Length: 399
Ligand SMILES: Cc1ncc(COP(=O)(O)O)c(C=O)c1O
Image (cartoon, rainbow, N blue to C red; front, top):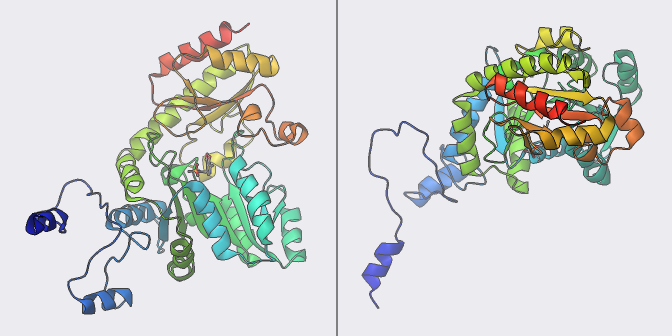
């Protein structure tokens, strides 16, 4: 028995009084202590600012969140409130359950990220919140649908969409929703606020899988929800977040902070490489078509030029010869990796028909342009001539 020694080992450590660290400190503490019980009561009751418990708030997470709010609201004369979440999926789930109640409906598009479609049809549906899938480019139909059904409370959308990079007009949809008293939620994961800022186009809520470009290095899983209605976010949204516990962890938030430092540099290079690769693939005789909004031939080129400041790092291309050929091309790639994510510094390819869109019936999938020969590429930051060589030799040697 050596009580004083044992107690010394256990006792809380105090940070030395010091000038600030240049890089963001990582606070790995589930709770925060109080100097006095009176201070604890004041913090608990909101009379004094302070931290209580990391599920409610944590200094590392809050520092990153303030920066994310500033980026997504950049150049706008409006307050934005955000919360980081445990993943992109929890961000989507949380905004839907905070905003909607049993009996409410959300209008959305057929070509969403597969996980979102499944969340809507398998989880939200069971809670009595119905997703109505429609063509969000058919504005007349959309407006009459909303006017004829008062239980429609929100429009949920992605632009550009995965994996055909079709774009939706945010300003037009934002205006339509506003005049009909319906809220809009946009998944801005593919673009990041560097390329597209939906709040400036009248959108109410923006969600992200920060797992992708915001982290940028494929080292964590996290999400983000931001809203222009600050009191809704602080009261209703935060309450649902803390009670369901889908909070971001400090280390994943810290990794996002690290990624944000180079976001503009990375996005510029992603865009540059993607455009160059899209052009090279368009010229290859083994390729039927290339989906990239930066190509003049892409159906959304004019819209993307208007509402984005760059066309992003995602593209997809359809090889001649269907699935067999597509799989041979993918196996022939040496520099690019086969991995089911996007937005990392390295080039990643995926075959939508056998992975992200596997559960979508072939007829519906093909009607959206997601054919068996389609390959999705998250174009990385490699030297562009190495990328050309890799894709060209994989195409040439796959016959
Ligand atoms: C556009 C989009 N939104 C949301 C998600 C879900 O994000 P997470 O995997 O971080 O939960 C993904 C994941 O691939 C995605 O591509």
